[in-house]
Length: 83
Image (cartoon, rainbow, N blue to C red; front, top):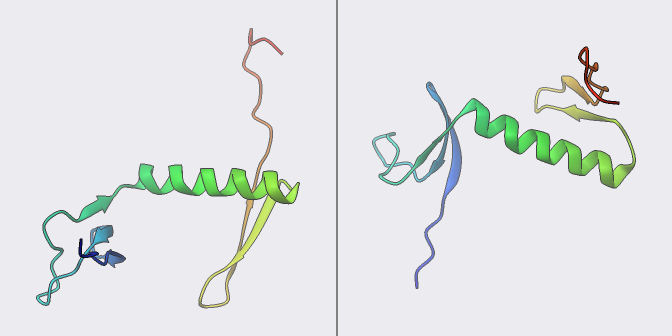
């Protein structure tokens, strides 16, 4: 069975997973990644990182050198919510 190479692409309308055609369009079967998909992936990655490192924050640096911090903070309890 031949393996099909897939990549992640950033396009004007967001991120895609799949294969890009020579004309710049995405091939059939490619998937447009939603913001919800990205947040689900990031929150899982972040939780796993915090659990493994025994930390509540993660420092990241992008390709341009800009730093970003993600931090876990306790959610406020709503009125009447059990402790």
